[in-house]
Image (cartoon, rainbow, N blue to C red; front, top):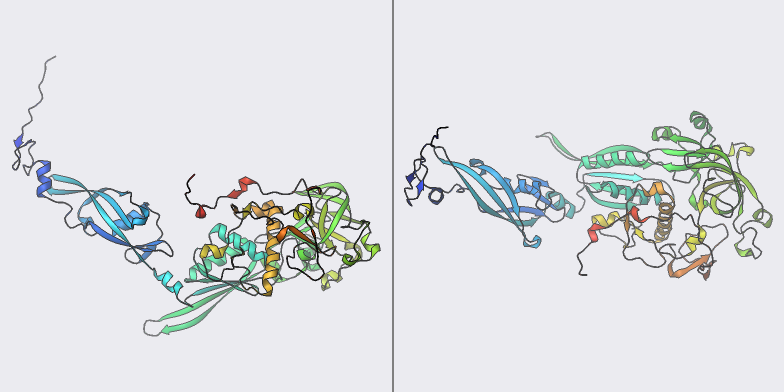
Length: 550
């Protein structure tokens, strides 16, 4: 095989330094070419970016404010837009150089290419320093002023409690629906949400339509108009009314509507509230769904709510074998709580002796969780008097003496065990003025006589979260770091108050007829099936995490 030598490479001397180089159009080496030609000329080495500390957004030229995390692609794009002369070169690479977060400086490394002479492309790497200038965006400027809202969403529910809005607040926080809200104001029957744009209010109305059964109505008010440019300035108001029926309420459906809903029994219990109502007949386990249009065509109110529940003791339970999901139909024998005590307190007895010692037979949907000796909460219909024509029209044989609603855990409630979890509030998220600091969020700011009732509703809401796993799945629970004794029962001081026999143990205020008794001792056995919140259901509150030395 014959050896073929490679062609000789002709070299010339650099015109400036005399270094042998491959011939090019400039007859200069790379070092001398960089010294003689600066391709970064016309590109500023220092610039500034505007940052709003209130909403944590950067100004993207010319007038758009964008949320951008540190060293993100969005922030890099904003920085590159601030540079003039970058369109005359070819950008091949750009990345951030780390700086201290408190230095208010951003350093960006750029790699650019440019053709300096004929068929000669020069590449150069250089750094640009940005100064972060604090300011206010137009939205935050309006927020700092008074009465600058453009759209208002009025959410109302005509019920005597606030538990619906406590749950609605947690749903809003979980889905981030409060991010565009300027402020939230509590009114008598609900909440007002203020927005700077009409589209933000419309998004909130759509969100409410998806999580609770509502009906909405829109209106607008003309503020000013310009006949020359044919433009006008409006304020928009959206009225949203939530159906006044809550979970565990006793409901009597109008007979005509009951026949339309698969001929269900009119006397039902509301077992779930989503974007529609789910009503259950405890005697047959038949469930019907009432949507918002169906309800508002023939509205009806609840006969009784959870504050009217009476405590019963289960004497015997016999399941009948019929099941529907988690519900098991059973025949139960119950009696009023404390009916067979030998030392009954006459002052706390609300019913006569014959009625209090009577055994009642009822049919319940709680056959899967009730055992003899358990305590259950239910509605006592024997002596009840409801102002309802539909209930009065029911035949007497179709009205049971007792309607059991849920299982109760009195022994666990008497023990002042702190909760290992907590909830966030919208007031804390938005940092608004007027926050009471009691952990109630936007609900309960009115204070005065209403504050005591809100405390009771908040405690009942926390108990519902503990006892309903499906309800817990719809909200975010956070791990509590500073757990105080007594937070588990809602009673301060490690004492319980002895109330009337059939009253609910939710009132924290001192009443004249109350008598303080020592807290429950460890001798009372705790309910083994108490629905404790598992550790894997809790989230870490990352916003409050700080670096601490070990």
